[in-house]
Length: 287
Image 1 (tube, helix red, strand yellow):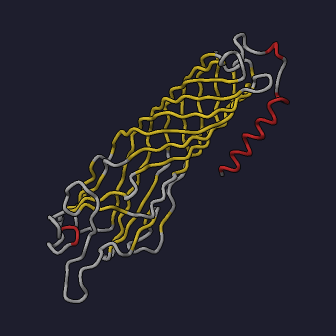
Image 2 (image 1 turned 90 degrees about the vertical axis):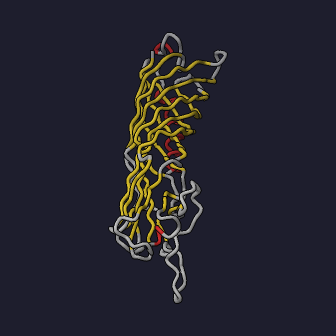
Image 3 (image 1 turned 180 degrees about the vertical axis):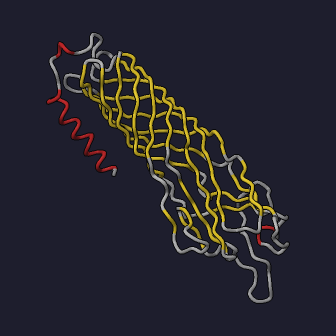
């Protein structure tokens, strides 16, 4: 998909000279030199490798570095209660027979920014603010020896970003190739599901705002004196380390694996990064 995106940028660059109008049609302040507002529509894809499954805090000391063990017996001895493994997706049943895919979906954003020609030459520097929303959801599932399945979903519901961009505008200046990067502040929504009906489960910090970073690149082309189209790739990374699920007794006996080391266990995804690829097409109105 990255190859296709790169190819699209090359094709756009090749088309720019052919699409160029007379210099007299250029805006009074020149191309890429002033304020703009715009919006984008995106195809978003989660980028997490969640095969690591869950991390557990069985003594609730805040460190997710424990193993959930079954109650020791003479034969067999105590074993890892999650030895059936995990997968990066939604559980299809109680046992580890495979998982469904993450939900890769669409996203959209609105933005406002300012560009300026550096020294009147081909280089362009700019700054933009953006509000975006994504419908994609990342899932991770783990399976216990009970047997039972456990699934956590997380979604970058919306985020606000401040990014800079730096690019070069060759030829008549109608086109621009640029890189972009900056900071973002977004709300991560979580969901939890399990086939375990014995223990109790309490989600904590399931709607949390987190600080993240963004980096990407793209191309932009004027097709009218005050309007341009964009193709853009953006990678977002957020640290999702506040969410966890507290597992309590419910109706389970004292020999329940979740209860053996202090009466309860906290669990969360082992990978606390939430990553998102976004492939965007957009329209800017320039002033």
